[in-house]
Amino acid sequence: MNLTLHLTDNCNLDCSYCIREKCPKDMSEEVLLKACDLAFAQGIQAGLCFFGGEPLLKKDLIYKALDYCEKKSAETGIRFESKMTTNGTLLDEEFLERARDAKMGIGLSFDGKAQDICRVFANGSPTSAVVEEKAKLLLKYLPDSVALATIAPQAVPYYFESIKYLHDLGFRKVSFVIAYGHKVNWTDEDLDLLRTELEKTAEYLKELFIKNERFYMSAINAKISDCIKGKNNAERCHLGVRQMPVTPDGSLYPCTSFIGDKAYLLGDVFNGINNEKVIEMAKRAATPETCLECDLVKRCTNSCGCANRMNTGDENKVSPLQCTYERMLIEISDNLGEELYQIDPVRFAKFYS
Amino acid sequence: MKVTPAKDYRKPLYAVGVAAAVLALATTGCTDPKPKPGIDYAGDIQMVSETTEESVMELITDGIVSSN
Image (cartoon, rainbow over all chains, first blue to last red; front, side):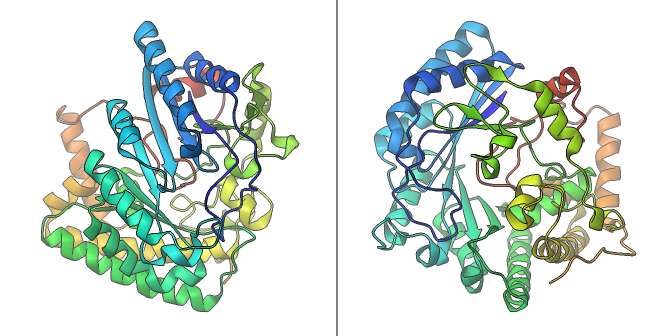
């Protein structure tokens, strides 16, 4: 099974939109190894995503987990895969060599040209220069790494510029999501500007397509690909089914945004998963009432319980922000899809299906 | 900003066209049947990996109804 390991609740950054409370809790080696055992206990694949806080504050635990899981994979024949989401400031060549050996996927949280607006060190100093250098180092070792940008309202004017910047830096895959939760305050004006920025982005993706250059920009590409495949990867929130977070003390929850809410506790690494509760939660997950009559119900993230909970406090209630953004994104993605399909249907199918 | 159900939506032509082409390839056995890896980047809801065969099996075993 797949687990997200919160190796520590500490972080060396103080990002303005972060919803996690920083505290000095670190995962013990005992919890770490129990979590690894749990990942191997179900299914024919074991997946770990190292997360935090900032996971690179606990490099020793990552090395231990990789050594342990690689050995276990060789003994059992169960496939092992690892990923990490990091702010990148603590990346170094020694770590990247080990990550490359382990075929680890690395997602670098990097807001591009808007980096210093929200992502600053704990002492308030800017991070962009450091992270840019680390991004170059990362791409040298692991060229398929992904840049993960979170767009807060104040970063919207830099949206397209950031995509171009990250692409120029060498990223072939970027993921841009808008910041949700109580720490951000979106207005209609922000969303109007976001539309303009998304349209500029679509135009840029068209230029790259004409030049036969592959570049994956998740917000738009995923909408097009999912529409072709007739599915929606974000249709149902993970809610502990596809990937489960493990807190530093070994507790299991359905998703990061639920951590700390005892009503959603799904067990722990010592006693295992409370399967009855997982099933009960999955049964409770429903399409929001306001979305039942919507033609786009199967194409948007309306039933991602984590996003809903962050925005409305209710896992089954969609927010006006999410609805407005999703409708905009689907419209712009479809317009781009139609254009690219007309330009070269064969290449389009190759790129997007 | 408000929750507004969309109406009169039609599946885009690109999706209809490519899906038909992919189906034609699949029936001739020209597509890769192997599922892609299945772990996602934490903190990201869009860079989602494909659901693996084994996670589908787990769902069935656990009796959890999911559209993934």
